[in-house]
Length: 259
Image 1 (cartoon, rainbow, N blue to C red):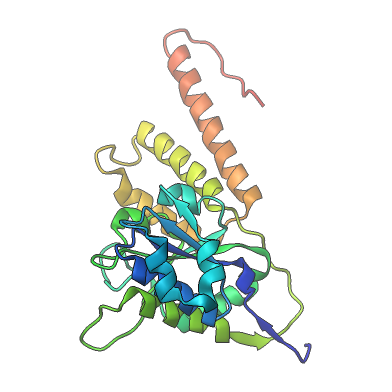
Image 2 (cartoon, rainbow, N blue to C red; image 1 turned 90 degrees about the vertical axis):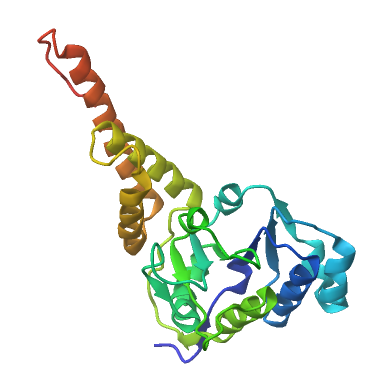
């Protein structure tokens, strides 16, 4: 064991604000990020993006963060390059079955952040992330509070960024996996859903019910790109076999694998 401390690679952390309503909250969030050494922000479908109001709350200290903000028009597209996506939620239960604390998720990200890009997603001020948004996340984090659970957007960003900034552990030699990107996983899930609907494994009228369980299962495995490729190859083979069976059902022909 080395005597130094391993910390999160903050350059690999991006704060993503989904449909923020107020420019002032964007600016205050940028300032909180800058306080904790995080500089990358993506703003998705802002309701009213006024950079002068953003800069006023960010102050000159965080002006560099504001100037580098990426504006996106679709959350799925914005998250596609990332290897790990963490969604924030104030509500619990329902599709929010497995939720971690900020300190726990920060500790887990120490090693993963060395070789993987990570997005932390915050929802709109009035309602948070939707169920559809949460399906794009690998993991969920909840900030514990007392009776009143609603935090200002910038306050929530500060709490998470603080935990990321302070997380550390003794550095040890280890192999750090390079996870599949969000884009690679989304392609795999779309292909899986299509196959499972067509073979009647899941109900086509409510495919998300079973797909959510499948997503949680694969999330626990932390799939690498090569493993995603294997699963997609299996899906292609099932698809080919099903089509061939249909073609040969009445012909009595043999089926040989294309491989």
